[in-house]
Image (cartoon, rainbow, N blue to C red; front, side, top):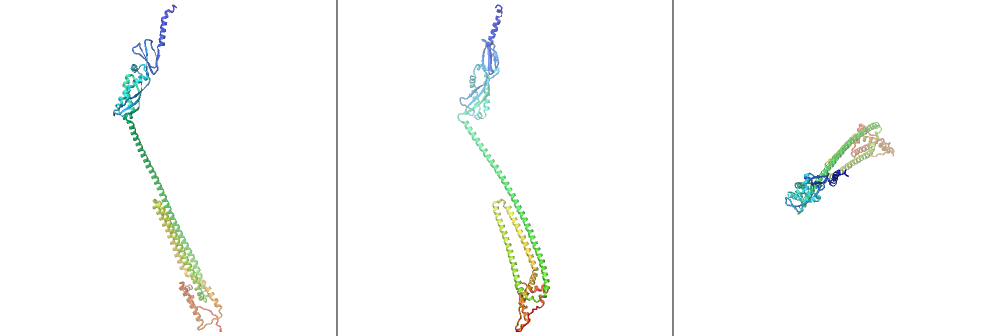
Length: 486
């Protein structure tokens, strides 16, 4: 016990120190500042760290350092610089400055206060500053440039807040109203202007769309018209080319027909000439044998040859009339076809006016081509007819002579047959052989004159030319039966 007494003061001091430590230990959070004061002239500030407060000799005060929201409202209307009363609702974010100087200033005013109490203390000052800024701005500036308005409020209030150790973090304008509804009217005006501009823009867009559509339609129509024009031109060229080919083909065909007809006529002429020559030779050989039967044969020729000539003439006349009728009908059919084509082309031209000139040109070209083909064919037919007429003219007399000579034996036979049955001939008056011969010669003369007047054929001249004048120059001998007495 006696040994412990010397250490008692040390133990007491240690216990006292331990009590002081246990009872004076403090630790501040990051959003608060602990201010320890009492022993020293300048207190200690603890922010987010620990410290020792000496009991009975030092005290501990707290200061909130977190962010605080202050509602700034103009409780009464404030006139702007254009004398329009407005009400402004804003929100400011503030906090106590974390610098030692700011904490000291704030500690003098807001020590141990709750955050809402501090915000209430700052509200009046911020409202006053905002009122002052409102008075320097127009209603339009406040509404159209709120960022500038809030910046001016912050700058104006910052001077007063610095004196209190307060830092303004932000200031946002929430709402601006006026007593007379001017803001609403401005909005309506802007709305009308916006609607007007929108309507103008829409009208301009519709106009641009209509113009673009019209241009597109015009381009499409131009392309379609150009394509139709090209097609019409190609069709006209094709029609013209076809007409030209048809004209050439018809011309060649007409030439071929004419050449064939001429060749055929030449061959027939050669055959007929050879036939006539053979007949003439045969007639010359038989002339001596047929001298007695010439006059009788002439009587037969008067009937037979005239009938054949009339039949041949009638046949040729009918053939010529039939050919003329056929060509007339063909011409009428072609003319009718051209008229129908012209009518159809006229109707088509009325339906498609823009192709009128091209179609008319094509029709005219086709008409000219057909007319040229018809003209060429008619010329060829006319030339063939002329050549045929020329050939008939050349060998017509020979044909007649051949027909006469071919018919003479038959005539003589038919005339001689009745005479062969006569037993006797009784003549009165001068009734002699000279008179009989004179009558026969007279009859022969009447027959030849009948041929000459009725058919235009001079039998005597033909026979004289064919027989070399032999038949006309020699006397005619007619044998009669001997006279018998009654």
